[in-house]
Length: 262
Image (cartoon, rainbow, N blue to C red; front, side, top):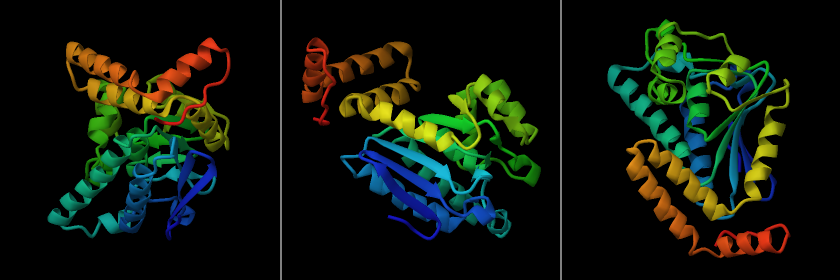
C-alpha cells in the first residue's frame, strides 16, 4: 500500500516499513502526508499478523525535517489549533499501536519529525542525524505533542533548554547520551539496524510484547503501586495464552519457540 507521499512495504513476514517519500522537501509533513500516515497507521492497527512497524524517511538527508512551513504560515488561529490536534491524534495513534514501533532516523529530524520519532517505542539514529524542536524560532511552539513527550524522555530541564533555544544541532551521539535515542549506528545504516531490531522483536511472543507495551505505557502515568498491580494483571493474562505454554515448553525442550500470537 502506498500513497502519493507515503510508501508502505513489507520486506519480511510480520515487519512493515512506512517511508515518508518527499525527499525534495526533506520529507516535510503537510496535510496530505499526515492523512497518508494516518491511513498507514490505521491499517497497521488492524493487521493481526503484524509484529513490528518501522518509520523512516526517503533519501539520504532527512528522516522528516519538520512540518511544511509554507502551509503553516497560512493557518488562522482556529485552523492552527485544528492542525495541531490532528497531528497529536496521529502521533497518539502511533504511540498506542498494539505492536512495537521503531523510528529509523536517517538524517534531519526536526519539529514534527522528531515529534513522530518520540511517539515510537524505539529510536535508532544514524551518526549523521541531527535533531531538534526549532518551533520557537518561528514564533510557534511544538504542536504535535513535542513539549509533552520531550520532557518525558529527557527531563524537564533539558526539554526547557532544547525548546526555548530552538536547538537544531543536537547530534545523534548527544541524543543517545541524554536518552532521546536508543542507539546510534553508522551513516546509512539506520533502517538496517531498525530491521535487525524488528527481527528480534518478531522472535518473541506477540501477546507478551503487546502486554509489555501496555504495562510500560500506562504504568508511567500511575503511582508505582498501581503500576505493579497492572503488571501483575497482565502477567496473569499471559498465563492464559498458548504462546506462554509454547515459550515455556520450548525453553525446557531446548528449541526455538514457535509463537502463534494466541
